[in-house]
Length: 402
Image 1: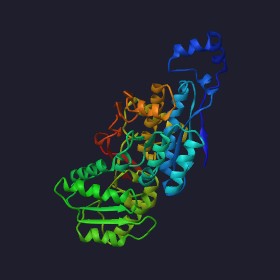
Image 2 (image 1 turned 60 degrees about the vertical axis):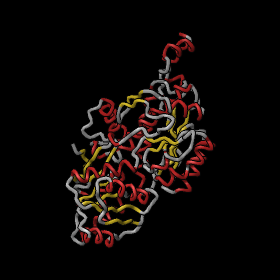
Image 3 (image 1 turned 120 degrees about the vertical axis):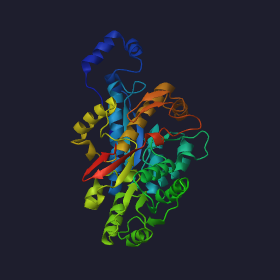
Image 4 (image 1 turned 60 degrees about the horizontal axis):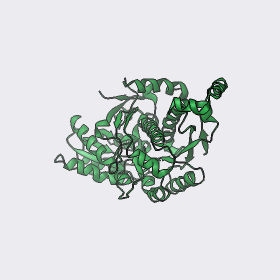
């Protein structure tokens, strides 16, 4: 899939007015709010997005794209960046490592993308580190939480994150599980580069509270029967299951548990914030809890209210609880604005200069929160545990737990 999205105004009369005033003088007067029409006449500054737009992870990829689209629409509405419009260039990596790595290089070298919005799949995030540092272009983790993506030992480090960190998510899930009455915790993660490292994160989070998992199991992606795993959890008296897994495998696990009369509380990382989950799991999805970094539900922040209005109009969504992966929309939206701010601060699209500007960005009033120096030379995590929220499935609605 290859798409370039650009938004520009057609107000030719305004262009003529600016010419009469004198283009250079007008641009100086506007500062960073340059004329949208003048910017549209120039080649776009491209931001790349390699993500899964097909298969079971397609909804997550679409959420990332929508967040970027909505941010770019705003940025281009005020004249773009450096008197040029922004555009997002997408590729479908099908959630495959080789495609994700190849597309990252292709988007930078052939398409000329000056920054990359990161894919789903921590295994892809880890695999692109060498390419990103060779090409010196910032890469933003928006849907992956692997700690080593950011903690990669590079200096300078071109990997940034506006998303969750799996190590911190594990602490959040365990803490919430205890608050929800959990006593005996089981771990059931998918057998991938995301799920397997998170097993150790969950064990460490439990140990910090003087707990041990009563059962620990993995689910191979693509398998349909997880009766053995659920039976082991049942026999170990696990009243709460902690999981890093996607919707298909979790739905199959819940069905397996139901067949043996086992219905524990289930508390999950972000992946179950997918509108396909209740359709796959049916009534078994009821009460499943999913952590988020952002939701439109009960969100009174002015930016969230305004963006929800634009989102529902643009994508024909009626209810905020129907938005798949709202965290990914928020993460992508804020990251795209940060990239634009960094290019303005740097006065350039060159990777090293944008990188330096990101590490001294200053304040940004974002969608998720107001950021103050979100990145520095030794810290590339824009979000932390205080920014995490818990949601719960009620029928087909993913609602915020107050």
